[in-house]
Image (tube, rainbow, N blue to C red; front, side):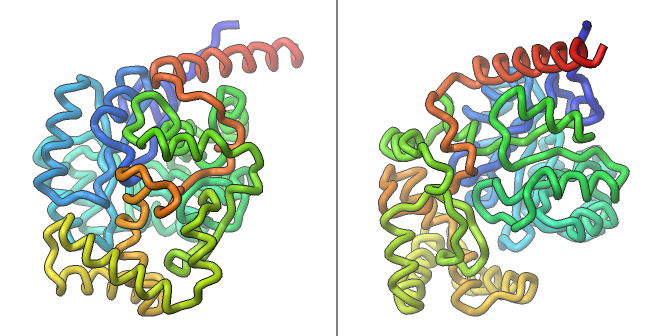
Length: 355
């Protein structure tokens, strides 16, 4: 049986395969994004942990490394969100991803310029709101996914959203291979998005010491959901920092928030007012406490310890539960080729069983 993996998603994004590499902070850099795109997938540059001048350099570098389309991620609460959007428009980036809608006006401006708007959501109501605001595609991440996550499993959330919206839907949370891609397509998704699987690849910039922590995970129970970082549920690998925060109380979290805030100011060049303004927007939009808001605004610096400095005991280790089933660091080209071959084989086997 001739099998095609072309979907509405591949048509919109201009990629060969319906496989998306998510915009992981400190991880989704030009090398990883370009490697994903050159292999036929679609990669998003991380824009929530970088200031505009560096973001522009990252876009230019990605263009140097690939002639394929790619995307940029940003966070509506970051102080320089409008600057990131201007860079996307100026450099004619194919798509943007975001976790909360930046508003109808900004979405309309992006869409008018031909930019595909592709938010990530973790609840049915957020998917419906995103489409109402103009989203072209919706990525739904179930509770199995890494980083900030919801409580609804991917399969259930995917079904809910597919029944409620007409735009293409991408499944995220729990995917790492061709079997998962076929399962998502069979349910009605137009593709899959993966973070942990690409984080654990040869082109990943994550230091060896941190990658070793990921490879050492063998039990999904080691990849837990905790509110200790910023009061919002996050799935991550249990480590020394998390244990200390969960047992240390609010004072320890305040101290970490303040240290992270100072480091974030140095990294981004943001003024104190901008930093506090970002935290205030988070507090108003997500209903967080002052401590939670400050921690959430500065969370990138806590993640940086592990993802950039190679100190896995001192930083956050965001991960989906699939980390427990990954024991290799393939090149992106090898990874995507294997996913495609496996998907084609499983689709062919399914067809034969039902014929």
